[in-house]
Image (tube, rainbow, N blue to C red; front, side, top):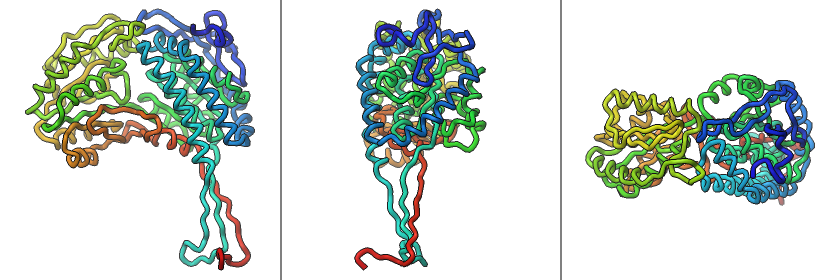
Length: 496
């Protein structure tokens, strides 16, 4: 169970501790933050409400620990990461339990997230040894006007202290997608977990603690965003920020100053279905992409743009699959579980009511009990409806009927988001042309949008983000290039 056994030391009474300088600590504030179970809508856990002074101490310790860690051999860094990955998998059950209770993720998917996270850490270890173990060698006479009197050796060196801020929907996986690359690259890491998902993250961090990482290298601070949010992101001790979330990321990017940023801020992923598409395949992927984890995914299908001539057939097939979706508590492994909070449910309901007032066709009756919203497919959605543009982050999926491919591409590109998209067609030439025209970071052909596998590049355009993720890209982003130039008194040519 969570907070027991090897995890017993991270809990103090009813309140989970924060992690600093290799120890689990209580905040001097004497205050805590409640974490509400989305299913019961009652307080499930409590975490420390850390102070700004405690953040300052964490940053000082992280800076000092990083200097020593940068001198640690790559093989040793990788060895510790492999240990953490194994511990994470070993203790998947209590961590998955936290995910079920904190974010209402179905039990089987919660276990999958933890195991996937262990695999990601191991991959980071291997990839880091490979790409950081080699540099480049340049000679000066490759540029016009120069003799071979200079040898340039380049290598990748760590940035310093990385601040990692994951979102509620994948708090463990999207935390380790930042932690793994940061650590293998020689950085120290300060984690600010989301409130919903904080206890899952604290259990995950304890696996790194048990693996034997040096004191101070990894820290995890919990608390109210109003108290320590801006203080963390604007802290002069931070050398890099990796953030996954929503509009908050825009504010962070404006305040962060001259440090590298890696941000994924959501999407309105469009699914374009052409007349020659395999409609059964498209329908299956639309339901999977639109409704898995109740649509609370940045890469969820969030609008279907289907050619009018096949729209009736597609909608019929999608509806048949939606009817088979199970609804209920995450402990029972239902397909549709409660959304993360009452405010999220209220926002989703606002989009639904707007669509209803403006004449959208409801393929299912809208039903809500607390934070639990039954899946709804909205047909005949028009561009003047909010649901056509806004990201619901819930089990509501709009269908817009189009008369040309250009109309679908134009709608996709008119969005302020540009994370992912997908196209269904049997014509690979059309698929490539549409992919090139779509203003998104990734385009899936004949499959729903997806972030994984975790080593694939993952990035957004426009308001969907800055930079690129994926293991290799994250490692490179969390390093900088350093050059050492050897100057020779006379030109020297190999075998010359």
